[in-house]
Amino acid sequence: MTENNSVRQKLLFEGNTRVITCTTIGGFTKPYTPHYHSELEFHLICRGKFRYFIGDTSYNLHNNSLAIIHENEVHNCISAASGYAKKMLLIFSPKLLKNRSFALEIIDRLKTVHYLKLSEQQARAVEMAILEIAEEYRLKEQHWERAITDVIEKLLIVLDRARLNIDEPQTVEDPLIQEILGYLEKTFAEKTSLSDLAARFDVSPYILSRMFKQYVGMGFRKYLIHRRIVEAKCLLEQTNHKILTVAQAVGFDDLSTFNRDFKLLTGIPPSVYRKISP
Figure (spheres, rainbow, N blue to C red):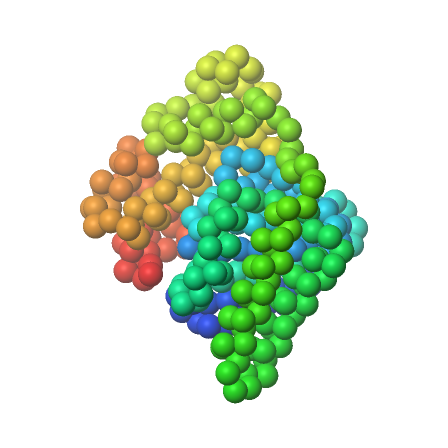
């Protein structure tokens, strides 16, 4: 994120039921690090253009559009056009809605959706909902937690209606790189190199490297390491496998390299991550 960006963020409901609201003003010159988390994430583009990489697809989002990132989906924001841009972010855990069956049904219907084109009215409703959540948290008046949950449920109703809007997904069309990413999603734990991948898809290593940087926001090797670490985080959270077993399962030949790359990307060793993960 550029130093000129203005970011305002509120952390609500600390712990497993956290809600984050964030407003970003400005543009991006560098991609975020690809990551995943167990919360739902909504990005409302109020003004300007942003490019997202979610799963194995890139999306160009602009005014009055919404990116939806589901639990444990690898994603990053690649770039935005120069000039003034504004987006609003809402992240919350589905655990927050455990007693709201209707809201959970909507979330289930949205599971295959990563992009929504909103009407002007719908975009304003989403914006007002995020602002209302932040204000409820700021004031913390009686029943504020219930009020925030109510607002989230209303917001989900708006998004459920927006699914019916007629609009083509703003995907970045490149069938070859999508095919390559789909292949890597199945084989990222296997031994592979840029040259091997280029030969398999009949393209030069130079062109393939350039495609990765343009489409994904980083080079092939870096993407592969990030994808392996994301999977390792899942295994550390969800299994009791030894760390060496986890390292080998995601494609690392030795424990020292795994520990080094894991700490570089997360800031902590895998042993510590396991202890503090939810």
